[in-house]
Image (cartoon, rainbow, N blue to C red):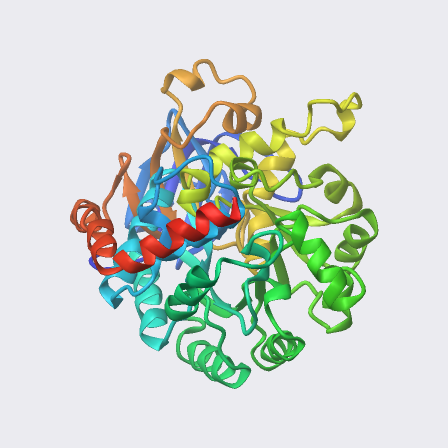
Length: 487
């Protein structure tokens, strides 16, 4: 149950269904039956079933798709859309702190719900939230879990931890002017914490919230391996072994990270992670841009997932991830929006389209181009794998959970319907979303959220940034100076 919304027996009748099942079937005028949050029939369902359903949805002129998966976002940054331009990765990372530090539990809840609203309205039903941006406590975890519970979305809360310095976002020579260095030390939003403290925090969160509502999972998420000691990374492996949870991390987002890793480990970050036992199918890695062919092969062999964030990678000039080579070598690839300040939005439709386009320039072999079907797979089944739930969702197939979205085929970009997969990736923006169902609960109807009062939350979110700017004035002043020093 979500607020006043309950799980229902739902029959969707007569839709154009893109199943993404093992046979890759596209069904015209097909029915889908949902019982107890699970898909129990796909194809043709007899009329005698209607009377026993809580709801029968007429899907005439509708496209039924698996819900999309946003496998890397940062919910605290939901209120930082369009706050800056022309900042590189170093400078933007500092600015994020001023917008997100020192929040109340209510502000954590509201910013998370705002992210959920944007995702639900564009057909995303599941997300991995690398949360938060800096040090946090149990109350922050309680607030973010409460938001995902109330939103009705499926979510993995990846607890961002680190016990080392963010050396990769300092100036190239690693130093700041003395006075500014003292101010950074006084206000440091990236203050490291001990492994024992982080172990207790993660263990408590997993024991308290992992499995909440049957839709929410929790696990450790090193900010970046190079910002973490080997002891902390080994602690993550121990949590995987103890609780069966997954580990999420940023990986090789910028070129400088490869050089720092070589100095630290005497080898590549991927090799070092493998030596520690971290490189398994219970690992998903955001960005993964500056990686070579041997490490790609190793990730494929170990079953680790990569989460491609094409919008933020380009906008922060971080680089171009070698996605075609990853796909060719068998790496599981998902899609993420990253934080809204980095990409500008939470619409995975944009990431899908961009994922097909950015690797084509200069590549004369069209067989190496990322296809619309591959991009759609990244946004569905690939996302499920990156959320450590491979095969649980991401397709319309008997036995999978009922996380679905209906799109309005009367919209101009669907007229006429030519190829539903090509059109979905190339033409749909999320504006055509009509109905969204998660776990057998209808959350969006007629393009409007019905599961909770979205308007009230959006109104509350409008006040969040002014409050943060007032509360964090000294931090804003400090990061502005640091930003100028690191560009």
